[in-house]
Length: 296
Image 1 (tube, rainbow, N blue to C red):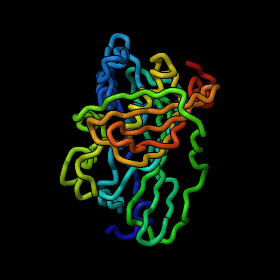
Image 2 (tube, rainbow, N blue to C red; image 1 turned 180 degrees about the horizontal axis):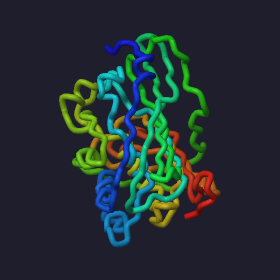
Image 3 (cartoon, rainbow, N blue to C red; image 1 turned 90 degrees about the vertical axis):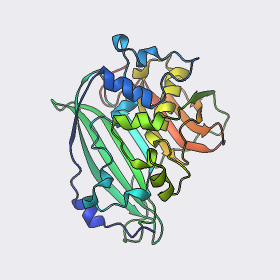
């Protein structure tokens, strides 16, 4: 069992700044890491062919990232017991097929669910050009199993993710993942052994390595782009969701989509094989880059 979170050690830890020089090859590797091209019925050549390349907006989640920094012993985290709880992404402009972006990440909020229970850690990454232009902001919440009991606030501040509509989904799109998808996704920077090493997965309580939550979210983003954006990835400008169960590489992900009008989208995702909800309380915005007035 984990011991209570050493909150002072975490607060004192300086998360490394990360600068990414990326090019079309990196964008294509990322696209492959979220299952692009696996469904023969879905035309995704524009995400895989450098001569007319579109960049998936969810690539902003890996650009400018310091990698799985909780594995650094000096941050005081028991990384084997960390799970991704929520992810939010806001785009301020489309991602170019190539460029240099700087990411700065900081822990902003910590919550204590009680002794023997979980702690919650929220971290925010800002992604900027070298000239300082804000491109994206990513906020993630981690669940630190067994790390509660240090005496913090019981809940994180801010709005919770809204409930899904109380009606049948308007659209459903199922997309496959591959058995090697987690191995490919790791090439974009998240080297957590949980997603590749069976012994690590067993220690964390899973029968085998699980797919990265952000790879699963990338599949959901692709479903929304194809279902509602006619394949134009730049139209997806905001995304948020909660992760509720693991998805294993090779499973089929069914994304249930509600179109609420005005570019306001709700979604959730199920594993076709088990019918488990793996992504819940999902919301997306189309055609509205935050604070810029830019439209796709």
